[in-house]
Image (cartoon, rainbow, N blue to C red; front, side, top):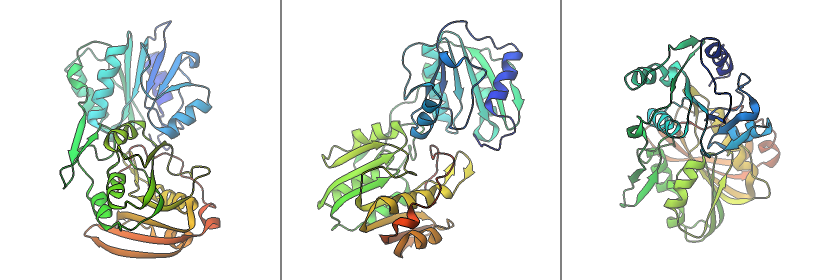
Length: 355
């Protein structure tokens, strides 16, 4: 949810409680996939379980004292779903909540993320309350029922040009097919790379798998991603013992790790909002974690203004032959002081669209 929304979830939740939404007197209340910076003060904090696979959100709510989980843990007296943009992911969350919740299920979402269409679907499946609209979003609720089994997301998969299959999952980046920008970057990676590499925003592991296959001289490839679901898929997709997995925010350097090579296809959207500063933060993170002789390989949409950041945090950067719509860069020699002097973006890249 955009921080500029004049009616945040907490206000819509207050309006819903005033309009007849009744929370059970006992039992845990699950809040699915909230974003850092949101507040749930109308709910009894001691009974709230935050459920999110996104590392920055998890850390934010844990710091506020909430019980946090990456996946459901037991049964719940009520559930609130902060609707994601992905329709398949939203349906899966509703189906999951319906099987483990004994009381009301509350759905809150932004209009530009498809809340109206989802509420129309729900009206054809269950007895839904009247929706309350405020700001850029809507909230409504219904009693949990077992009638959403067909909305559970099936395990996803896609296949590369060599016929290798990859496991994916609804809600993760490029769940329905390999991103063409990632394919372009993979094709451009040299085979003679050595040392330790990192894949920032590794997702379900396509780029890392290609790098491991292409560069036998690498001793390790560290996959860094903020989405626990994507990393779970990556662990299925990559069995090479050189792979190391990190559930972490790629806009912040990991401590005590220095790399010879970093590769990335960074996101530049948070929900619907264009946020090229996410890619900028990835570039600065790469520079901060590279050895003095380290090198970066980056793919991006042609309209994204990353050249200024590359010039600010690397001694040298070169544009490689790309493709219509995409540009490739190779950068060398990180400037540590410049790389560490920037501020991180205020939101994570959980639904970020890549190049």
